[in-house]
Length: 309
Length: 140
Picture 1 (cartoon, chains in turn blue, yellow):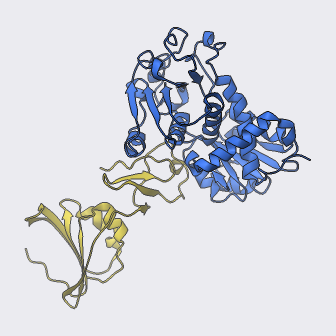
Picture 2 (cartoon, chains in turn brown, purple; picture 1 turned 60 degrees about the vertical axis):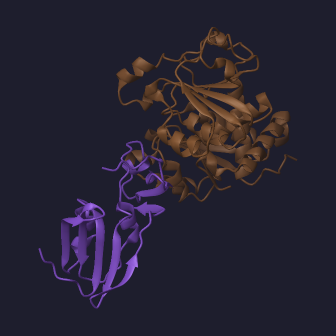
Picture 3 (cartoon, helix red, strand yellow; picture 1 turned 90 degrees about the vertical axis):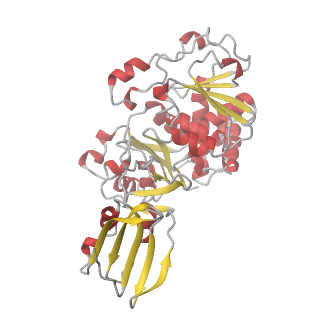
């Protein structure tokens, strides 16, 4: 595996292997603590994201590797007008693997053409975020014990939310998964995903605008933040940001084994009273993110069968 | 109106009425030194009205461009005054530098030297998407 740009770059079998490796790491992380000794991860964040960047860096450090990089575009040569391709070409001379985030959609695909080392898309605009998807799949597998025969509800910003789009594409490959989209009409799931993915493959889905109407059907509810930076108009943001807030009252009729997921950061779309509820799994996702990124870095460096001596 | 027959060249028939100039520009016919006839709004039993282009030169025509613009165009190759070949058009799987992505969040909006590449996402509905950001081409 040379590049991970889109979650669909991975076959179901490759995802299974990554999940198995991540689960093995969780069992005994010390076994893997020196696997990436003398390897360097470059984290190139042209757009700030503390969480994802730290998760990548923590993963590499936990494998005994080293990290370098920048955390926003102002500290890179892109401010001097350097193209993404040239930046990546340069950095691939200094590192063994690259994780990049960029505000422009498609930037990692362009970058991958010139990278001499494996490259991971750590998020490109509102487009893809494959490592979040892998993290989400690991969380679902750990909590539900399966990735098929599930009803998953996506709630909030389904129009711009790249985590939703990526997870939807990945889950669409498993048997008997039903999708429920809960959003205001301004933030509905894009038409192309409905047409080219859900309808083209005859998948079971429905769109509603209230959480309470469907909460009893769901095995998973995936909450998302209404992100200010995705709006061109601040008034639209202010009008919509508080629309879908999950609290204990809305959860009253849920299944006992429902799991509540969120890619984080949260603003107020999940009330803090939910945090201690056993159904809340969003901080477990954060922990899983580190293990999944460890599994991914190892696999992309061809070290998946290595354990520390 | 009388337009001379061509001896060696290409006739593009059944162009959707009003699209001839777009085809002319997309094929770069303004760069040719030969005679080119643009015939607009010709009566057609099948289409009501149609446009025709007659190019008095035997040149390598980009069938992908034509197929994308209008897959119903008939391409006739003329040699010594006779039609020697009729080419059928198909929607191309990929088009390069024919359209420009209009998504302001797409990487092509800031990096000008990138090729504008679109792939055929849905053949039935003629939907093309940007290879970089997956935005759909909005046709005028």
